Image 1: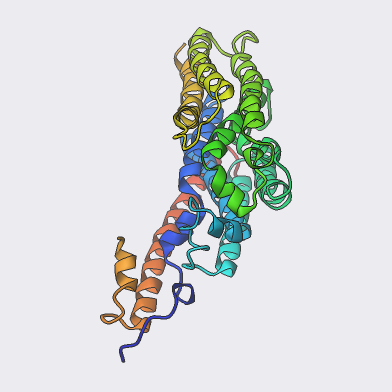
Image 2: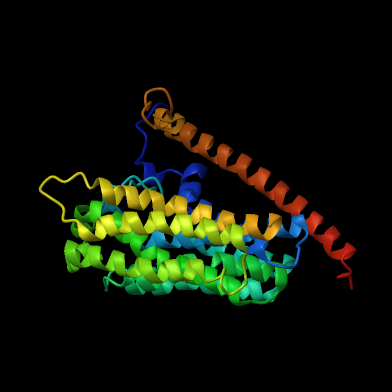
Length: 301
Length: 56
């Protein structure tokens, strides 16, 4: 008997919507930095175990993304950038997203412990819990420092990759953690400057919304300096060679130039925010290239 | 427009039960592939662990 279809949320969610819950685009950066942390480690890891460790990092990041979207469905519905996600678009019920996120988190941790080691499992658990409880539930709606402290969640993958290979943590992966941690504010604030209205409409206290553009631009400039220091540190400390060192000099010089351009300008009426968009895009490329340079240095230099 | 949007925007052609059935089938297929891959991965991990001397 032909009938009108029920609302999409009443239907079983499509598997592609579960995939979308894991934020696959964010996952690529997480997987890449985790892989680089593993490849930079002095101890080789069996390819199957290495693949499993990276898979667990990806699944853990996916679980954190799903739980983030489960908790923030109301905020996502108010922002143009995120309104098409499965929950705000009504293609999935919240209970399914919660079960999927918790299940995936448990699965990734179980597999990491079974296949790799306790140290990597503990750090992976810490990163999932930090992202969900500290960033998503506690900080995001309360303070403009949300992405400063919350940035730690995205900084764990190189530590996990290194721990998967060696079973412990050393200075180099801690520096890589610091690099991503300090990279997050300029990266996200550049984004926040050109999607400020979206965040304001959703009531998220991002720095440009709460403190204004001038303060945000200054903070981008300020955070870029310790980020560069963390990126350069492996070279003088003898943890990386000249290939990494000179690559880092070049990449950081470009980052600094773009960040200074953003830090020193003032947007006009109907500004297209080209320098901010340029900094945001370059910051992603920067992270890929600097981690790639580290691995190339460790393997080929 | 994606394939599933086509599916949803064609209420005259498909009944609700047909759409539900199609979704269940596609999810079951994906789940089957993932479970098979998981079994293969656990088998491979076990072989590596045994070869590295982790066997009891």
